[in-house]
Image 1: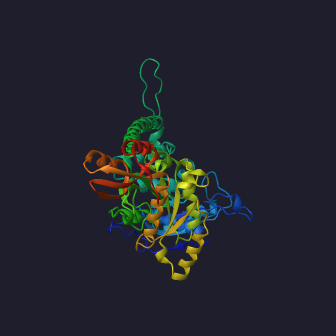
Image 2 (image 1 turned 180 degrees about the horizontal axis):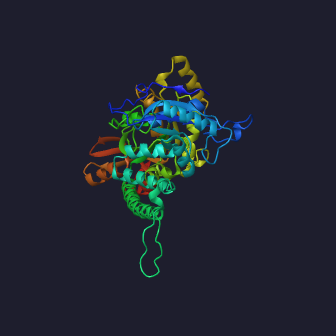
Image 3 (image 1 turned 90 degrees about the horizontal axis):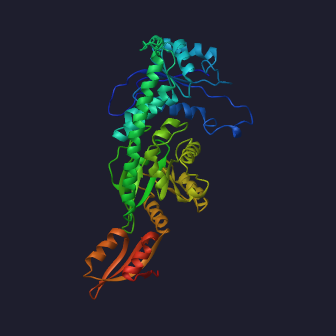
Amino acid sequence: MEPRIFDGGADRPRSGGDKATGRVIVIGPYLRMRRGEADAQTDAAVRDSEARLEEAKGLARAIDLTVVDALIAPIAQIRPATYLGKGKVEEVLGLIKGNDIELAVMDCALSPIQQRNLEKAWGAKVLDRTGLILEIFGRRAKTKEGALQVELAHLNYQRSRLVRSWTHLERQRGGFGFMGGPGETQIEADRRLIGDRIARLENELKKVQATRRLHRAGRQRVPYRVVALVGYTNAGKSTLFNRLTRADVQAADMLFATLDPTLRALTLPHGGKAMLSDTVGFISNLPTQLVAAFRATLEEVLEADIILHVRDISHEDAEAQERDVDAVLRQLGIDPAAGSGQRIIEVWNKIDRFDPEERENLKNIAARRPPERPCFLVSATSGEGIDALLAAIEDRLAASRTTLDLSIDAADGAGISWLHRNAEVLNKELHDGRFAMTVRVDETKRDIVVNRFAAVPHVA
């Protein structure tokens, strides 16, 4: 396939006017599939090659790289030494020299040997998909927790890359004592230092997990339920988060625009409250190091009462992105096809990009979905469909709660205050010195309300 040349200026990131940091070529080394093999391949393999290459370019632009050139390199098999065949390696070398390129991004996972051999052949730095995503996460992390998680993932990645690419790694450090011998090589010393740092980071992250558990326990003592947003990166989660909570979380047309998790209060149609959590975006072939490092953050998803799976329904690879998100959820122990799927609501975002006829067609498709896996069409930008989504969230939360009627003396300030703190007050009217109240409570507090306030089941 002929390489497609892109104008460097046109492919520069448009975020804050920052200057690009390097000239890059993006290479998509995608395996050719024989006829009939598509069903047996992974979801990543059956993705459209053009869409995969476009996503890889977006990842490069996310760290202010100038995409000078990009090409798809179909391969019949993976070569152990260089991943690509000899002819393609030589072709890319010509492009690198001809365009004064400093960095080659391979949209795949390279072994340390493959990475080293390509760097020698091309005379340029080579970054694979995992390394590129780690670089992005390193720039995006703002909080101490996020920085710890990214550094841990990066060190685990670097430890496997300590091959003898540099001569200093072959030097030996002197031993000690009478039987000290020649000592350890620099590569062994570097591995030991990285291992020590990883152990310290893991201990610090255990403290983070303990703190999160305390925060979660605190939220469980009040009547707030948790709604978590998940979805493919750039699906519009942060824009939807801002729309639902009137917050001001960074939202940009950029992969991994936000990284650190955010919690805000969500006001439901009838005055009830919930906590809305915005999480890091998922992506195909998400490095396992990141899934492990960010498990403390993603525990918010595990504990959520409702999971909103936000999809960019206008994206040409929307179905493949859905499968990628489901795969990461399964890694976390949430199976969308099993019982865990009953707390998932799909949100088909960016419907403002469709004309009325296409929108009506999408509504018909949504209406035919099974009731246990509903979906809602919204536009986080314009606000279309948000009211219906909020009503669905409220109904789903209410399904696991009990509605009770009670009468309480207006002078019982402590009791009224307790109800406001521990239950959702749906109605409150004053008659002859007593408040007639309708409240909604968790099953864990139902008996307390019934016994203390002589409450009875609400009759609609």
